[in-house]
Length: 62
Image 1 (cartoon, rainbow, N blue to C red):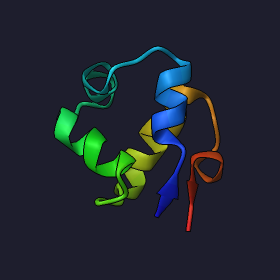
Image 2 (image 1 turned 135 degrees about the horizontal axis):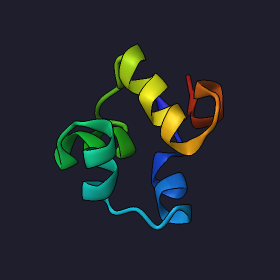
Image 3 (image 1 turned 60 degrees about the horizontal axis):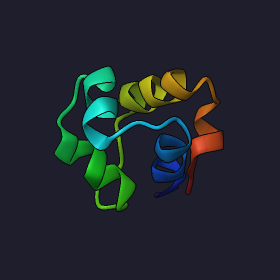
């Protein structure tokens, strides 16, 4: 699934580790989502959207 996570993270000056801590996941999970090797669960996608104050569809595209 295509996503804008890396761009959004950079715009908010967050490292992968910082974002992982906010989401309660590992840094490797954040990396896997950014490189489109892993699609987040719906609850995790909602958490990500919450962190950036966006709708899920503003971050992820099929």
